[in-house]
Image (tube, rainbow, N blue to C red; front, side, top):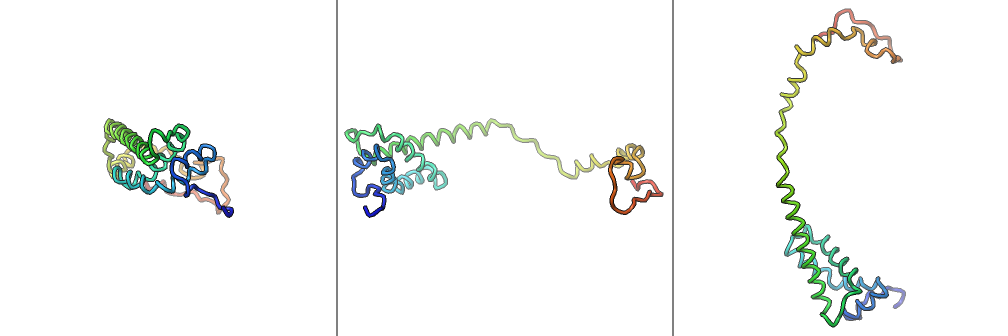
Length: 161
C-alpha cells in the first residue's frame, strides 16, 4: 500500500461494493471505473450541459443504495445504468413540469418607451404650479442643514423654469 489509499483497482466490482459497506471511501473505485462511461451515456441522451450534475446524482444514489446491492441479482454495471435511466427520466419529468409552468405564466406587458415616460413626467406645464410655491432660496429647501462651503447667495431672478 505504501501510504496510498487503495481505491479498489484490484477488486472486481461486486467485491468493491461489499468492501465499501464497511469502508465507504473504497466506493470511489467504482466512480473511477464507470464515471466516464455513465457520463457519455447521459450526455448522448440529454446533452453535455446536464451530464456532469446527473453523473454525480447517479453515483450519489448508488452510494446511498450500496447496502441494498445484491450481487446475486446482477452485476454493478447494469445496476449503475439502471440508476442512470431513472435519474434521466426524473430529470426529463422535472424539465417538462418546468416548461409547462413557464408556459402558464402570462407574458410581461410591453414596456413603454423611455421617451414617452419622460415626456409624461417632465411636462413643463405640470411642473410650473409646484415650482411657483417652492422656496426661492436653495437654503430654505433644507432649513436644518448647515452649509460648510462658500456662502450661498440668493438669486435675484426666479428659477428659470
